[in-house]
Image (spheres, helix red, strand yellow):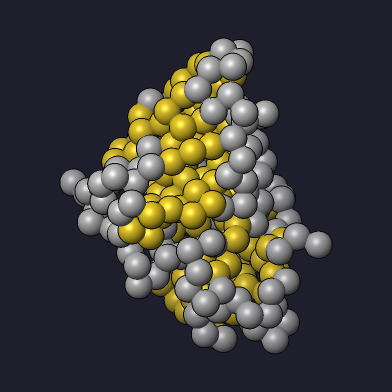
Length: 113
Length: 111
């Protein structure tokens, strides 16, 4: 089955720690994204990548970092510089021909203790 | 003013009724419009997209776009309790990779 796999599903972190969220897709999509969702809010774009070894900042990139070494993988690191990291993190991919047609993973829920 | 605005709801309709969800956007250059459904605690899934003025139908769903008035709506006919979810409107300009989402409207379909 084609899809996007995110892990871990739930993650608890102490303040001051970096954490990395995994995202793997087998849809053969070139574009991948990371969104953040807070309760009662829409999705806000953190980073996106149109092609391997290239990525761009979204609207709320501060305190986050990404890499895109393989087409299938787009991990997100939440660094200690991110002031309010507790949120629901969603990875997505899309075909290049229509970036708005997003396919989402199941999400990773990060809680900072 | 938010770039994409939706009434947060909840919008409550009885089973079998038509649910009408509305979305307005501020950027006149917007060209692509999307509706995503998100069940509580789950990730969003794309249900409709529309690019041209007018109506687009897909089963029980109809998307309506009026670029002059800068609004897009989603109609759900014969609403079912399983349609109870939050519906997110998203807007794109020039096939940009930066899709702009509204905060969503929560729909509750009463049995």
